Each structure stands twice: as structure tokens, then as C-alpha cells.
Image 1 (spheres, rainbow, N blue to C red):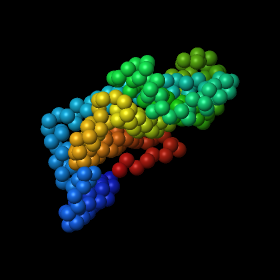
Image 2 (cartoon, rainbow, N blue to C red):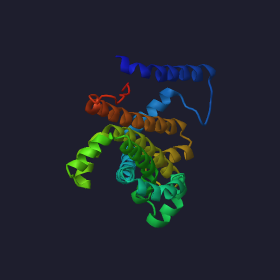
Image 3 (cartoon, one colour):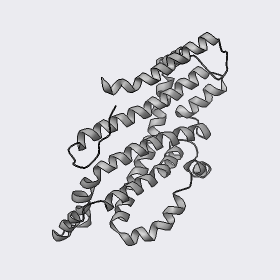
Image 4 (cartoon, helix red, strand yellow):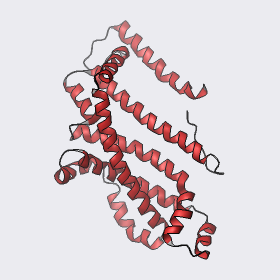
Length: 254
């Protein structure tokens, strides 16, 4: 029961907004009653438009997330294990990392045109850097005795990575995954709003252009619920897989 107490505040806020808008009889092109937002969301679910847009957004986010996270973890393992490689790449990383991913949209459009490729490439760029940095930091925190065991037993670099590094940093990688999934969703919706006519971001723009604040706000809340659901699911899986790890702090999954 305790884990659902977090829902109390948003429910109360929505109820107060409903009461205030009805009592004050506010007419606005940018606001809508929470009950009307719920109705718009229900109709969008029934006609399939919201689910279709959700599928498009999640597919683009997942493709970009897979590329960015996978590439970042691989690069982080290499840089974490090799101080010389880290020094060699440091300037390039510090120059490229601060570039806003959305600023690459014109370049990605020139390369890929419209569609999933452009969205996914932009998401991959955004998720690559935090994955790299968190992986590199996690590798540096590994007990040196574990690496000494790998050297004494003459494990190859691939065996060391598979048997020593990945099991040791797995809990930290779940934290990185949760972080980058949120980034992937944000960037995907942003790209759809700015440049790519598909997904939830495009649905937001259509609702705004057709003066449907109820549908626009319903889509916004739906995006928030998707982000919460993904994070909650990963956190629950992390707790289940790694709660036995001594010294690894588990967050509350409520």
C-alpha cells in the first residue's frame, strides 16, 4: 500500500484543478478540465491513434537507445581499462559531449532524411555520452584484486570483460540504463516536435495546431506515464537482480 502513496499528490492536484476551473468558469484555448483531458485520452486510445503514435515513438527511442547505450558501454569499458586510451580520447570527448543532440537534427536530416533512422541517430548521440562516462567510472571502481586474479589466471581481454568486468559493473549499468532511457524518450519526442512528422511529438503539434488543449495535455500526461512506467519497471528488475549485492544502495521502487 505504501508504494502507491506517491499517487496521492497528483490525484489531489487534478481534483483541485477540476474544481477551480469549474467554479471560476475559466474559458481558455490553452487549458482543459482534467475530466476533459481524461475523455480525450480515452477516445485517442479507443481509436488507436494514441497507441500508434506511442509505438512509433518507442520504436525510435529503443533503436537509438540500443545503439547509444551499447556503444557507450563498449567505449566506457575500453577507456576504463586503459588509462592511455582515456587520455588519448579525453579532448575529443569533452568537445563532442556538450553538443546538444537536437542541434544535430539538420545534419541528421541531410544524412538520413525523415523517419526512424534520423530519430534513432539523434537519440544514439544523446545516450552515448552518459553511458560512456558512467561505464568508465564504474570500471574504475572495480576492486583491483579482481583484475589481478584475471591476470594471474591468464584470462584474455574478452574473458576478463565477460567474467570479471560485466558482472562487477552490472548494477551500475542498470542505473545508466534508467538514466539514458529517460534521455532517449525526451530526445525522441523533441525530434518529432521539431522535424519528424510521426510519434507522440507530432501528435502534440497536431493537437496544438487544431486547438485541442485537452488532447495536447492528454498526450503530455501519457508521455509522463510512459517514462514513469519504464523507470519503475527497470527499478523493480534492478531490485530483484541485485538486492543481494552488499554495499550497492537500492532505491525505493514506489
